[in-house]
Amino acid sequence: MKKIIYTVVLLLFSSTIFASHILIPMDKSQKNHLKAYGIAYWILQNNIEVNWLLNYRGGSFSLSYYKDIKDECTIRGVSFEVISDAEANIIFAKIASPEVNMDKVKLEKVPRIAVYAPKSHQQWDDAVTMVLNYAEIPYDQIYDEEIINGDLAKYDWLHLHHEDFTGQYGKFYGSYRHAGWYINDKREAESEAARLGFNKVSELKLFVSKPSKISFLMAGIFLQCALQQTHTT
Image (tube, rainbow, N blue to C red; front, side, top):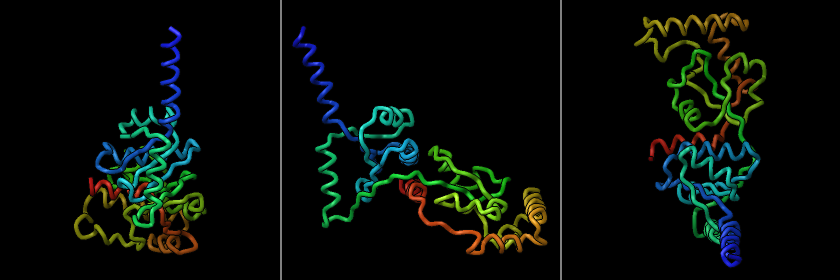
């Protein structure tokens, strides 16, 4: 009996030692690439560091083993592998080799994301919004009033909705100027411009698009890669 108990304890102890990393692959073995980016975001939200393995198996993620993370991957349908310290070190050594075009980037801070879109914006209007919602990555929706109030400084990444910043409605005028939704959007834009103290929508758009008012932020590592995956998988 003692021998059986000793064997069970040894197996449990061994699994703790040798299965100490989680690898989230982003190659063809990954069942749900978009949800995988959401998992990486969720991990950062829980103040756990994530290694982003650039060009290794499609840009995989690795991190220390936590049962809660393993369970969350299972719940969200994200493929993962439990590997040992030795296996992780072999991967890191391969990535560090100057002979390969790979790198390991440590992610420590969860990015604050905003989508620039009018209040009438629907999720299906925009592919990035659909990706964010499906991947369960939180974001704030902001528009001209928030820009004027200086709220843009709160965010690390900004996605611009279908906006040309001319305020001339030229994009859909030829085909949809008589459509009810077009007329309603035009009326709402003019009403909002007047409420914010501008005579024309074009004056409002010029104001918010000045470099001192709005920054076209680069980054969005999760979203750019997620969108790329929608085209390649």
